[in-house]
Image (cartoon, rainbow, N blue to C red; front, top):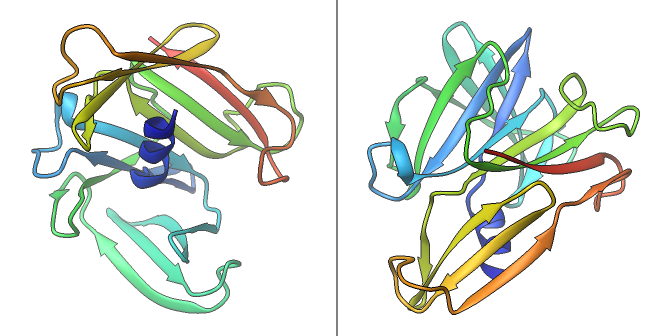
Length: 199
């Protein structure tokens, strides 16, 4: 579970909506070419101010560019800087390997574990009212401190398998089972939350 939480916190994918378009930020394994099994995670956000890593951000689309506006306060009132990204460019200059894309509709890839925070009625219908939409690649093998881990999921739970090697090979030494969460008012106290497996 600690490895899963570390992945969720360390690798974030961001997505923002403006005039029916979304900005998708995909995070890949360091040094990769932004393709295939090197995908770690993706996030979808509406045009909403969110706080992450001591900076608030809003992502939006302007023409054919992705714009990230950074703020020093949690409410996105005190502007810090604006960064412009070329869509579909695999960028590893920040230490992480990231790729921004512009989407016209939400597309959930297969073989991912999905978490969604959404507003409005707490009924599981999130597509029109989602705040953020994260997905995690089930095929990705993460390694840290001499061990590795990989995830799988079914209709009710996420399974995290830990291996005593760096390749996620052989039989796992440990298996953690976490049931999906589906509740009204998330841990932040403001949004509904749902999780599911998309195979």
